[in-house]
Amino acid sequence: MNLIELIKENARKNKQRILLPESYEERTLKAADFVLGDGTADVILIGSKDEIGAHAKKLGLRNIDKATLVDPEHYEKLEAYANMMVELRKSKGLTKDEALKLLRNPLYFATVMIKYGDADGEVAGADNATGDVLRPAFQYVKTLPGISVVSGAFLMFLKDKQYGDNGLMVFADCAVHPNPTDKELAEIAVATAKTTRAIAKIEPRLAMLSFSTKGSACHELVDKVVSATKIAKEMNPSLNIDGELQADAAIVESVGLKKAPGSPIAGKANVLIFPNLECGNIAYKLVQRLGHAEAIGPVLQGMAAPINDLSRGCSVNDIVDLIAITANQAIDTK
Ligand code: ACO
Image (cartoon, rainbow, N blue to C red; front, side, top):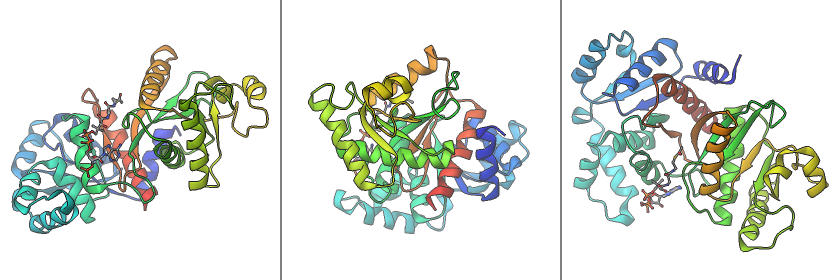
C-alpha cells in the first residue's frame, strides 16, 4: 500500500470532522463528494443549503447529502461564536458587531467552529490566497502548546531511493515563516518531527542545515542554526537531531563521515530543516523540478488543530489527499 493509501486507510478507521469552507467551489464540492463516498472523513460544508444543493445537482454529485451543512445565517451558535471571538481578541479590541461581521466570511467561521470544538480540521485555498486562509487560523485556532510559529513541511518522494527512507524525505519550513529566530527554528524542527511521524509514517532523523558543518565557517547565520539545534534538544531531549550540517554532510554518508565524524545524523538524515523560508522554498522547488521528485504539501504544522492551505491551481485529487492528511493530523493532535 502506498503512503497516501495508508493515510486514507488510517483516516477511515477514525473519522474526523473536516471543514471545507469554500463550499460552492466546484473542485472542493467534487472532492467532498468523493470523500463522503469513500468514508475518509465526515465533511462539513458552510453556506446556504439551497445553494450547495443546487451546485451539487448541477455537478451530478450523489453523496453531498451525507455532509453536515452549516448555514451561518441561521446557525444557533452564532452568538456564542461571536462572544468567544470577542474574548479571544480582547487585547485587540474586537467588538461583537465586528465579530458577527467576520463570521459572515466562511474562512473565519470555519476557524471559530474548530476553536469551539465543533470540527477537527479544515482544508481551504482552492479559491483564496494563502494569507486569507492562514490569518483567521493564526488568530483563532492559534498554535500548539510550546510552539509559537506555524510552518509548512513537504513530503519529498525522490527518484533516488538511497536518500532518506527509501527515497522519502521531509523538508521544512518551505511555506510559511520567512525569517525565524533560533527559538522559532527549534520549534519548526520539533513540529516537523511530529509531522514526519504522523504523516510520512517514518522515524525522524533531523539535520539542521547551514552553509557550515560543525564549525567549518564562522558567521552569525551559522550561530543561529547551532543555537536552534541546542534549543530543539532542550525542548525534546529524545529528538534525533544534529547540526549545523551542510546539505551534503547531512545526506551523503561518505561526506558526513568526513565532515562530521561521530554525528548520529550526518549522512543519514531523512528530515531537512532549512535556516529560513528562502532556502526551504527554493530547495523544495529545485528538488521537485530538477530532481523530478514528487512533492506533497505544504502540510501546515504547529497549529493547535490542523488547517491546510491548497494551491489555487489544485486538482480534485489534491483536495482529496489533503483532506486525508488533515484527518491524520487531527488524529495525531488528539
Ligand atoms: N505562526 C503563527 N502565527 C503567525 C505567524 C506564524 N508563522 N505569522 C503571523 N502570525 C500571527 C501574528 O502573530 C498575528 O497575530 P495577532 O493578530 O494575534 O497579533 C497574525 O498572525 C497576523 O500577523 P501578520 O504579521 O499580520 O501576518 P500576515 O497576515 O501579514 O502574514 C503570512 C502571514 C501570510 C503567512 C505571511 O507570513 C506570509 O506571507 N508568509 C509567506 C507565505 C508565502 O508566500 N509562502 C511561499 C509560497 S507557498 C509555496 O510555495 C508552497
